[in-house]
Image (cartoon, rainbow, N blue to C red):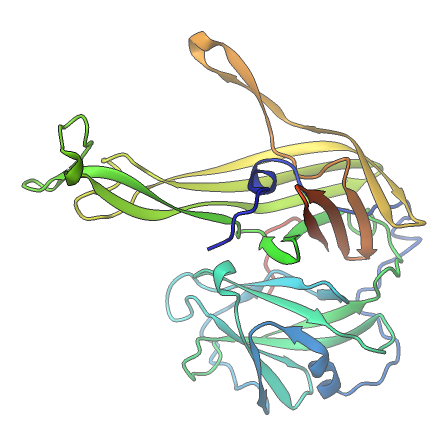
Length: 378
């Protein structure tokens, strides 16, 4: 269960940590190198040993042949890494059938004589999406540097992998910028938020709260009812425990020609106390779920001398809510970026926002995307 910080409201209901860099160069003037090659000669085993993974064990030989029982997809067509920052990798697998909920993955650099068996991050994964984090220690390798890697999901029962996919990996040099925030692509996708050194939220992964609802049951007819209106004594009330959840599904920023526009989607799930939705006889919970879309915009300037962005004139969409006899009031869409936080481009593919709230340090990392969020690649 995620720990609660004082800045819970900040994280999910208000403002927050950020985003970075933006510049003035054009794609033609400063093309982004997708697959750099610097002539550094390393064998595949050396490269494999520099990959940093959580919950991983090393095995000799090659990844077992795939059974090809599923067509799994990954959320990146190229995996970019920069020293000191983890990349969050999501793998999409079927939500039913044999391949449901693959929780383990074989990972191997092409040509290496060992491979890793990695367990997905349990609290960030579900039956259809598995989450992994990857970092790389380049040591004295001249950067940028690239290689190819294979992923093969399996179910930890000793059976063959259910599929295999290969991806190029590019290690970027931190602070070596051959691009701008708007070029070659203006799209930036929020990847995760770090609070006091720990990853606290990411797309699809946020705050959960243990809670409960209370109701009563006419046992002779097995009918759920409200306790008070039906005259039940308090010792006859039934409590059903459950989990309420709040998370951001995605947050997408677009920076171009001095203008920023953004969208984010939030998901809210609460227990439903209605006896018509929650069965207090059988103990079956009902839920109230909402998916809300938010929009915001403003301006920015980019200083290439220090790779920093300054946001100004930030606004979010406003809507009038009618309260009948009480009149109307204005509701503003949520916006997490702020004019008073630090935003900097740390490489051509990563933006970082830093700030502090109530004594806690906040870092948010964004990754440059070729196309909008929630796309999947073979």
